[in-house]
Image (cartoon, rainbow, N blue to C red; front, top):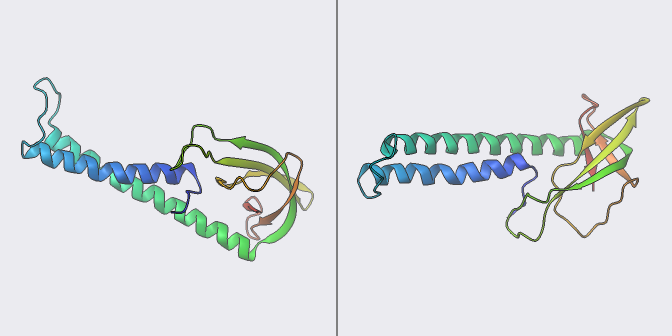
Length: 155
């Protein structure tokens, strides 16, 4: 399975998985299969399906947002200007995990100059540890022709 390209997509996946769980828990509570405490506030048979639907729709929207961003990134890579950029910072996301817990993603912060103006941006989540990056390294950057502030790293 392809690793997520952003933290937003991880939230989308989690919400999409929680949605059906809450919905089914509400149905089980409605048919008295899943017992609740006498002291609980609110009726789980009513609340859980509502939260399940909200989680599922939210997850779908977040995943759609990520897919749209992936399409935009691919379009920039195909049609954008290729210029040189410099790595300014590399940040490992220690508390972000997906699947194998021993591998954390990282993000590269970079700058590039276009028409004498310096722009800053950051990469999407990177999972590949085979390539070594260092602060100060030069990398190729693809810049959107229509919006110069939009860019992606060529790795």
